Image 1 (cartoon, rainbow, N blue to C red):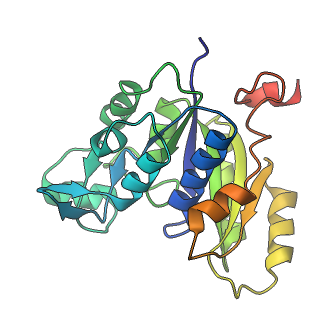
Image 2 (image 1 turned 180 degrees about the vertical axis):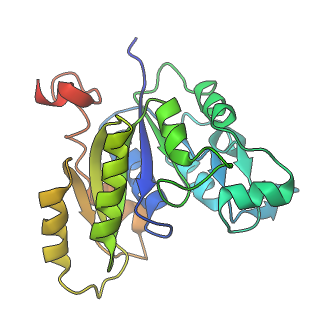
Image 3 (image 1 turned 60 degrees about the horizontal axis):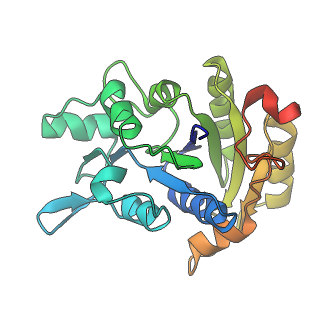
Length: 243
């Protein structure tokens, strides 16, 4: 039985559509007959429901990942304030750690899964504590990175800075997704071309602005062929992509 492959979905900033893109990846992979799992290890901006904090983002991911048993499997730690995780943790008197979040995910990854999608919180270098960031969690999970670029003014700089740090850490940037968060963005097509020329990874798709059906739209506009090997239907990482 093959080892499940892990991709870490990060973004150029907060509010760029990471959850929509992650859910779209899950749905698109399911349509290809792949078995999927999803994690959002730490979530902020949660609400109290039936006596516990619930992340709507995590709930959305769970709906797209039938192998996940319940919301608590998707998310290790949930906070009510919609603030950075390290600040929410400090306010709640909780110590976040890469080791703890990574263990939560590893202990729940199932051998029959083909693809495991782990969604971060905010951008790439969001702190978890004084010394660790979500980028360190990606390293700990040995995950390939999928970068969601929120198409709005400033996104080229944010995308290239993120890609540079991904490379510095020795990680694989498996692909990037252009998600239109500002439908009025000037020179949208030209900005996408500039990103394609500069990012060292294939574009997995361009998601148009579609508030009425974001996940369905994302799934229809994503191409997973750069991620899955055509011959064996497995996720390609590193030098395998060119073999």
